[in-house]
Image (cartoon, rainbow, N blue to C red; front, side, top):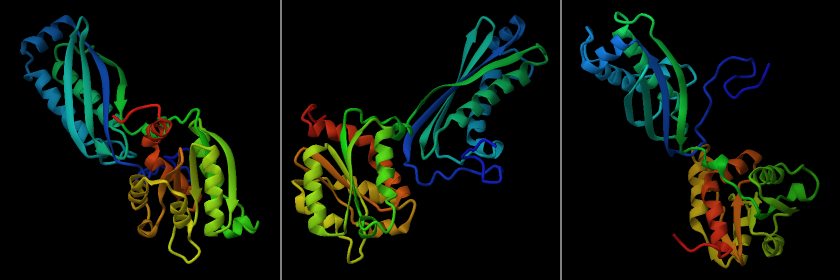
Length: 315
C-alpha cells in the first residue's frame, strides 16, 4: 500500500495533525464552469428563472459551503475563515464560477475554495435545470493559493552551513547522533552547502571553540542539544561567550512554535547570535524538534543571511 500522511499504519483514514505548523495568512482560489443553453443563460442574466435570482442564491450557497467543508470531507480541518468571495463571469457557453477563500490558520484553504465553487455551480444547476436539463459542470480546479508554503519554498542556495551537535554520549560514541544528520538534511534540502558537521561534548569551552571555528568558515551554524536546564546543558552560555550580537527574535520564535508541540519548550534556553559574519542558532536536541525549530524561522533565514553578507539594505 502506498504510504500517505492521511492514512494510519493500518491504511485507515486519519486527520493529519497540523498542530506543529505555523499559523500564516492564507488564500485559495478555485474555479469551475457551468455550460448551459442560451435560454438558460438569458434567464440567469435577466433574473427570470422561476426559482428566483440564481446568482444571488448561488453566492450564498458557496459561502455556506466554504464554512461547512469539514462536515462534508472527512480529512479536512475546521479552519478560521475570515472571508469568502464568490463571483460569476458570463461566457458564451454559460458562467465561470470563482471562489476565493482567505483566513489565518495552520493549513491551506484549497478544499474550502473547491467546495465553495462546486456548490455554487451546483446551485446554478439546480435553479436552472427546469430550463436546461442538459447543463454540464466542468473544469473544477485550484488556480491560486498563497501562504503556508514559505517553509518548503525557502531556498538557501549558495549558503555555506555547518552543524554542531552537543552531546557527551554522541561524542563518546555511546549513542548515534540523530539530530545532526536531521539538521544537515533540512539544510541541504533547501540548497545550502553543509561544509562540516561536528560533534562535541557538553563542555562550555569546547563548544565555544567549535563555534568560533565553524563561524569563521560558514555563514550559518546550527547547533543541536544542550539547551535545557540540566547541569550539563551549557550550549546557550557557550554561544553567548562567542557572540558579537544577539538576535533574540529567532530564539523566541523557536520557543513559541515549539510550545505548540510540547510544554517543555518553556524550559528551552536556546540562543541565536551573530559571530563575525555568521548566524549561529541553537536548536533542541531531538531530530524531530530540529526540523520543527528550523521550520519556525525558515521564512526569515534568507533575508537575515543576505543582510549579514552586506548585500541588501534594511527594508
